[in-house]
Image (cartoon, rainbow, N blue to C red; front, side, top):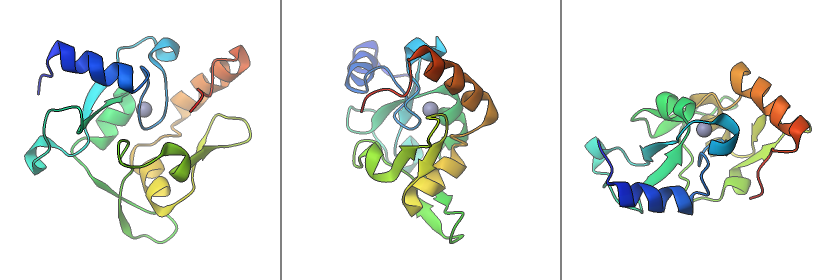
Length: 139
Ligand SMILES: [Zn+2]
């Protein structure tokens, strides 16, 4: 679904030009972020500021139209992280090297797993960003 340019700009500024799920910045990855419908349109989600967030290509592809994931600790189906309703730091933190995202809650763990927030490609990139002092972004 296409998002009007002005709305896209508002979402991008509000989300500080970074993925609302993994916090990858446009400046680090060099790619324009996708616009994610947090609640998918088929499930009644609207194309407005309250239901859109920035998502990197990877998070957007793995999320697709899903709204739940599996918490690997309990194997229960859990609603994944909702960037506009929940605070990132309540559900996630960085590991000691700042290259991997650790889920702090069932929601956080399910989201890390579903969106593959620690896929080897991004972890390698984060290692370079950390060494350059570009990561992690401030909350
Ligand atoms: Zn992402």
